[in-house]
Each structure stands twice: as structure tokens, then as C-alpha cells.
Figure 1 (cartoon, rainbow, N blue to C red):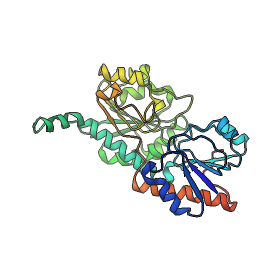
Figure 2 (cartoon, rainbow, N blue to C red):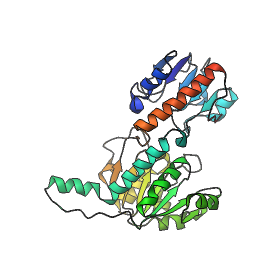
Figure 3 (cartoon, helix red, strand yellow):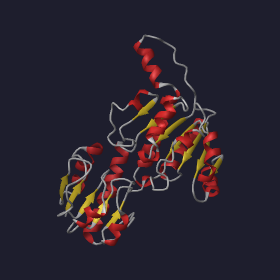
Figure 4 (cartoon, rainbow, N blue to C red):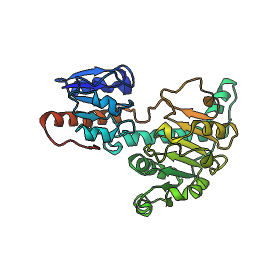
Length: 315
């Protein structure tokens, strides 16, 4: 089979090289960017961060499977794929070690912002010792929006930091409250109360048409003045202009961003002059998670080759 990897050859920690080792009998091609010219001649597409629309799919001649190298499928037209009998699968975050890796980065961002990473660098540069005074996590309230694989992994790790954990979930909030031992769980209708309680707001939910720009001016106005926003999910959940306004006016204390409104983001974007701890969409890129994702993707391609039922189908 011929497999298209819609990214640079060495993207995502050498993912493609590892996959080639697992599936040495197949032919691979990297597009060299987050996108591709055509799907003609390919049996499998690994879209990574590429948009896959109806026109792309209509131009394919033998595509059987869109296999995501992670959980996110917001760029893939699932309905069009289903209509054209092209199967779509992902790798759920809790099946590969990805959720654990993302949760670890979330805690890194919380600590970096709390201990004032910018002033620490300034103090070292100016030979000052003993400053700045940071904020401890102990006793603070952490609010997690989205209690799937990543949200659950984060909640599990944060319990040892002596924080109060609250959450938001659209369906069955009381069930997940009991399962995870959270202090409080609300629904989107409780957003004002939720944000007003949080010292840290952590986004751990997929991007949909309903929640695009959910963090905008109206929601930033609901947050505590010194609270932090951390986005571990998708850039489209946050209105970039509203975030810059909230940072510039010190309406919030700062932000931790692993995902952006455009990717890669412009390094000269003025938003980065504010209290923003940014990482280049690498929350799930660790030795453990990459190995787990490679194994899952390889298994599905083997199943496709041998006519077995595929795992984690979404269309």
C-alpha cells in the first residue's frame, strides 16, 4: 500500500521513520508541509494537521483509510468521507500515552506561570537573587474544561498538588464528578460560576462549531483578575484578539499556549510580549506517546491490509 504522511519528513519527533520501521513492506511519502497536492494514488492518508475536505476526497482514486496520528479530526470532513466509503480512524489520547504527556505539559505551564518564568529570566540576567516571589499551586482552584482522556489524566496528576479540582462537562456532570472525585462539576450553562472560581482554567476539549472562540471577551470578563488560561487542545477555542486584550489590560494573569490561531504562529506576533508561556504544539510529543501512537497507527494499517475490523473508527 502507498501511504501519504501530510507533514514534513521529520515532524512529530521522527514519527514517520518509526512507522516505516514498523511497516517496512509499504511505500511512504511525506508531503513536506501540513497539506498535500493530491490524494490520487494513495491508499492511506495520515493527515496530521492538514485540512481534508470534500474536494480532496473526490480527487482520490483508491483511498481506503484516513488514519490520524493522534485524536484530533476537526480538519477532516467526516460526512464526506462516510459518503465516499473512506474510513476514518484516530488514536484516542488515553490509548497511547498521549493524554499523560499532554497533562504533564499542562502542569509545566501552570508552574511556569505561577513562579513567573519571565521575571526569573530577568533576575538571572540582571544578577538578582531571591526574586521573584512565586505562587504555590497548593490551595488554588484548577478548572478543567473537557473531562475526556486529557482532562482525566490532568486531574489524576494534580491531586498530589493539594489543589481544589473543579470541572465542566456537557453531559452527565455528576457522574464524572463522582468518578474523578472533583469538588464541583458544571455544564456550559454554569460557565460564569465556573470561571469565577478558577485560579487556572485549562482547556482539554476538542474543537467544534459550537465551541469555536468559546474563550472570548465575554468569558475573559468572567475570569478572576489574576487567573491563568492554559490551552492544551486547539487554537480555535480562543479568540486571539480577545486574549491579547485580556493580557494587555491585565484582565488575566497570563496564558499557557501549546496551540494557536494559526500554526505555526508568527514568532513576532505582539501577543508574545505579554505574559505568555508558549510551546510549539508539542504537548503530546514525548518518547512514550510517539511510540504508543506509532504502534496504534501501524496496527490499524495492518488490519486494513488483512481485512480485519479497524480500531477507533470515527467514520
